[in-house]
Image (tube, rainbow, N blue to C red; front, side, top):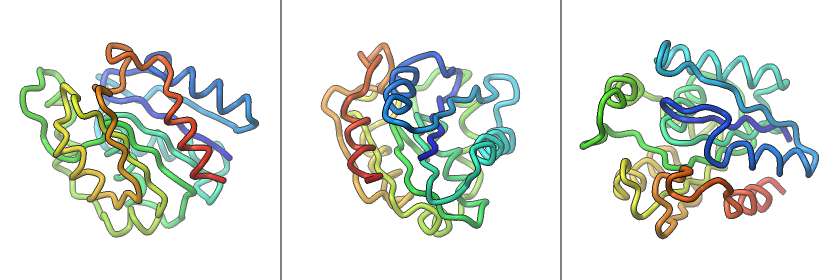
Length: 191
């Protein structure tokens, strides 16, 4: 399989559980790319969709061997991407995803995130291009309220929603330098 792991707003490939997951997936024979998305400069839906498209194509996809793992804002960027292509991919794993404006989130997050939220998405095409979506939400996420995370899982047609007690936003601050449950879920879903 070919994996693309995507960070969120103001993020990078070197933080949270991304390096750990890349290492574990490579050790079991998968090809993995963790690109730097444009943020904060250049963070807009067109640039992120373009970057995702380029990375997926560099791996020979999109196709049924393509798996995308996305965190926070990149989950919605992936939905924009899926709504723009005419190919099916194997699976998506969305961690702390959301599709609604978030309250009580400090700048620059609203300025950077809202263009993704306000832009229409072809949800039917998202579901058609990836019928195997699993969402992870924390029951105490300080940024994404549980109801917004649940609503996102319905919008994207997730076949499974895992609510993680004390998962927070699944960042290093929440204790997520590793994410064994995500790895085990990936193994279960792609076999």
